[in-house]
Length: 289
Ligand code: PAF
Image 1 (cartoon, helix red, strand yellow):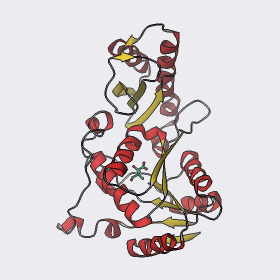
Image 2 (image 1 turned 180 degrees about the vertical axis):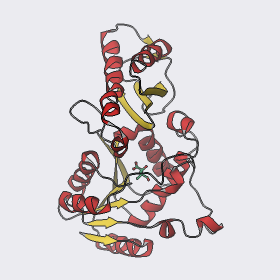
Image 3 (image 1 turned 120 degrees about the vertical axis):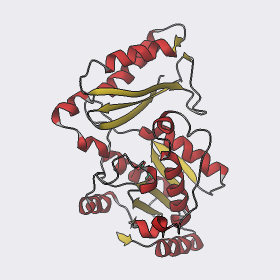
Image 4 (image 1 turned 180 degrees about the horizontal axis):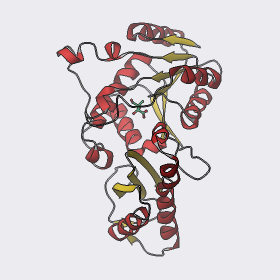
């Protein structure tokens, strides 16, 4: 596995692959890898085949964190991540520094950002207003450096995937965005680097997110007529409130393509929620089919 740390070297390599007609699959991450990330790497490999190149990046992107969020505390373990990438069959691991990604940002020398104006507005965008501007900016930059044919994102960040798909289309990036299913622990908790923050007691209570998704699915499956989103939201909020460490940030029913909030919930409506478990903010989502 080759390690690349500069933007110039990454782009030079990518241009060489492009000239040679080599297919490139890309998995951008913020590191502290888990089974969910590795499933994205395997998916990228299947998409580009044995003769293709799989690139993963690890970069904890400062522009997608608000000043009050967990940028400095974000879990990091580069040596472990490198070993996992090697084992999963990553060909090139891109590890840029802040100076490579945003040269001169602190002194006004960096001033260009990418903003998606529609799908990024509610849910995560409502709770974290500067988040998606950071995500779209860094992903656009990574696309320009890695020049992938296909990029793989996880469905746990459903809104992120929708925003990136829209950005890719709107800005004519010549690549395909693939969204791979959420990987879960045995008790249903979605795999996330942030699960590391949870104490044993919080970890047990964190399954409430999955249980809320399950309850919504059961209600929708048992109903002959559409359910009112507001009524269901109250039911889910009450379930979440049964866990002392849990504090609901948002629960939203929406159309999975447009992300427009749904008033009536039917099969095919999507549900997303964000819940603080202690100080850790977790997200999850599901299609209610
Ligand atoms: O999902 C993530 O890990 C990040 O938001 C991403 C896509 C790597 C951009 O920093």
